[in-house]
Image 1 (cartoon, rainbow, N blue to C red):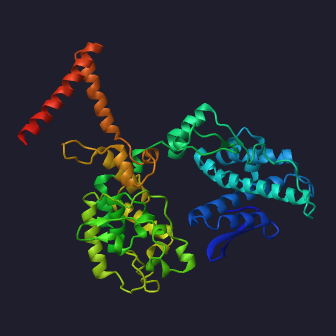
Image 2 (cartoon, rainbow, N blue to C red):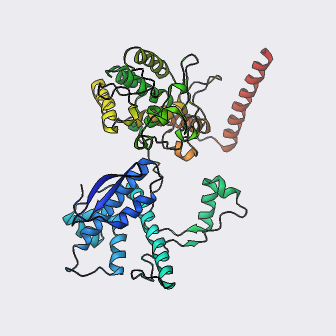
Image 3 (tube, one colour):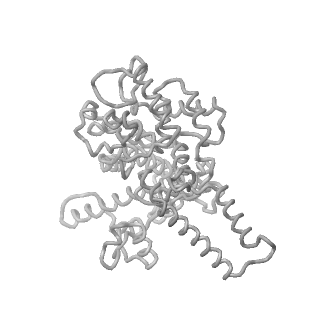
Length: 463
């Protein structure tokens, strides 16, 4: 995985963390300091940031190998190396940047997407900002007469840690996307100066990301345990993340009312089920910010979930009294332990095998069920007035998103429906070979609206 460094898993105050060793096998203090600052971050953030920073250090050591033995890299050269990192990750040998090309010769680029590269840069920006804060603190100590190592009086990267006034476009964008910014009198005043490339929301969408609605049942029937069938039926029925389903407690399930609530572990820290976990196990309780415990369970997956749950409870569940996690290990050596502690690769392998056995192609992983759920609600969910599809705002609420733009990545208007609407609109506009005038179009639209109002009046008169 790494060419110049070694990443070691360790514990920091009972929580999973990492240490990084340089090419000579010595611990890198800067990495340890950064790991300490992530101690209170969610475990997935901590693991990703430390791995991404380790990759960055690996890249820096590879670049340092060019310099003459014992010769330090100049600040200008280091800045150029850091700025070339994005080109190295994305384009590698195909980049126009000579540094990225050269490093790719000895340490081949992963050639990831622009967005994936920007995501990795989040960890590097955080590390560089931490380095700048420490530099300023050390400089203050030196100026005050305390003995300290020699500290540079110049910033590594211009703008690092500085704030500036936002442009008019940036100010409007912040107000649109942040409720807090919209409440500030006069709008946001200052923003942090940008350093290194940032990721942008990926709004590209392929229908293959969504599990085919009519094939989910086929995959569920290929699963060999009631536990797995219940788990993935719940993901399909509620559109929840698999991590949310795995942390479900029996208190959250109402079998009589056929309802399920998804609760943030932070909202009930004193739950006996959480207190029964060891410190390192509690650290693995994750929550990605679901905005509501409310779920809308769609058929036929809701029925499949409760049926499989009943069979799981009768034939597979091990009553132990230690905790109330619904999903648990079944192997004898681990029987009764919460299933969320299992390796993700092992759990996902169950779904992938079922997908393969069912002959479903083009989808993988539990997230495809979340895409399916969002697309179904937006396009096909039947409504009392005879129409289909829920408003985007309601879909946003049911998927637990705080912003509609997040929902847009999962719930997309069906391409076939849009094409049918466009074909119909074109026929109405140009059906007989003659383009209708604007007045004709307005007349037709108003007549259609009038018919809707008359139908509503007729219905209310019947009542």
